[in-house]
Amino acid sequence: LMALPSYEEPGGTVKDRLTAALEPASTAGDQTGDREIPLTLQEVVASALRNNRDIRVAYHGPVQAQAGIVEAQSAYDPEAFAEWDYGNNSNPYGHGARKTNNQYYNHTERVGLRQTLPTGATVSAHREWTNGTEWDLGDPKQRTSGRAYVLQMTQPILNGLGNRETAANIRISRIQYGRSEEELRKVMINTAS
Image 1 (cartoon, rainbow, N blue to C red):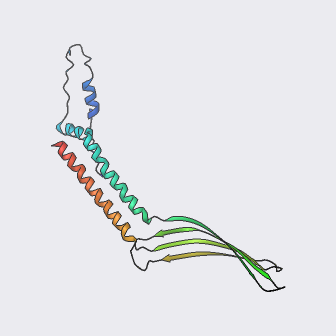
Image 2 (cartoon, helix red, strand yellow; image 1 turned 30 degrees about the horizontal axis):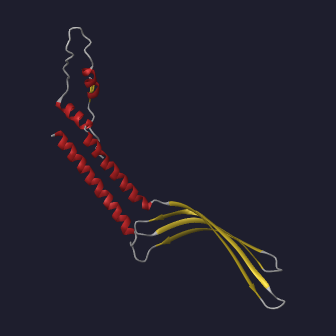
Image 3 (cartoon, helix red, strand yellow; image 1 turned 60 degrees about the vertical axis):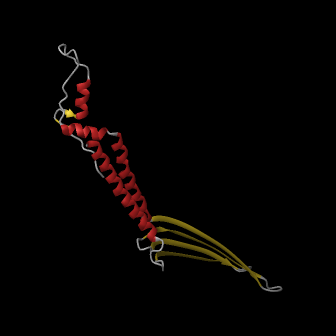
């Protein structure tokens, strides 16, 4: 991103010298208040460029376009996730005096990270906890539990089908950034000439 020039000299900044020159004369011999302002052509041009409203407005174009690039690239940022699943299954069966009711409760928690890659693949790594309870009428409850570390990768069969949109958004943002920089240069050159 282009920075507007800043010129400092031993006599102070251009703004300081202009302010001092425009203050009322303090000497008795100077009745008109006219003072000579010692500025170089380079300082005058730099001050005009720095204080031009069109340049100030055009300066925000590249900044905004740069933010668009970051926004488009954020599609590839990793994300943290936490999931919880709960299931309840009741299965009555049997005839006559021997009726039973098989019941099962299960819940699973997952905590981890996942990221979409530029190829369209998704990679995730997470820790998983599973707890369940199963019983039948008249039988004691059976509890189950398990823990696992899971590394998973999925790749779309139609490679890049959804990913092309993200890549296009990044390209468009970069082009807009270049155009806005050129527009800023054009405004600066037109102002200086």
